Image (cartoon, rainbow, N blue to C red; front, side):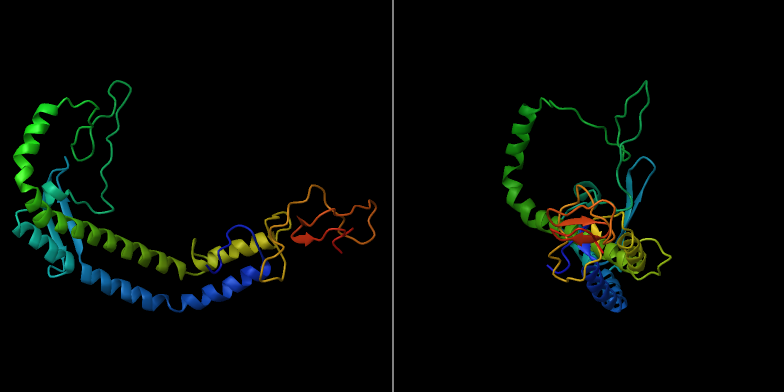
Length: 250
């Protein structure tokens, strides 16, 4: 895969990445327009819950969207989205209500009590399994397929929205944290810092030297050093790669 390096690379590899990435930013607006159109096609689901987590209503916008039609079909086939699906928006998660020193946490935010192992329900489980056996194929056909499609559609909508947010952020200015230009500025700072030895100022796009080992000792930075040291193997130091046998970086 292109640009598959992470924390270890040289200046030439970085500049090649910068050129490619900036070229892609020009396409971001078109991609955002597509994502918004696709989200409209899928539809957004809205949930309304009481303070104790009891579901009250569910709606879809637009009503004739893909997920709107799936939920309508599900209800026509006898399914209840609140009871069987227990759907929730990504920004409205269920969490464990906090406890204290005298009373440990035991209830979720939707009112569900946290269970314990060892249900001791073997007798009733076998009876219920027998009572439901003749319905297994009906439930799988009428509800199971629709439930999977609804959950996938909700997940797909969330992924479309997450990508749109990431793209909007990426096209921001250098002053906006976590934009592409902000990341590039941070990386340039590291490239220009000789103390950060993971990055080097090499000009080889192939990156054949970038994984040279860190120096156990540094050769001098001038050709007329007071202490004459020689690199016994290729090594990284002060933002450059020193070849074996070199006595200085000059």
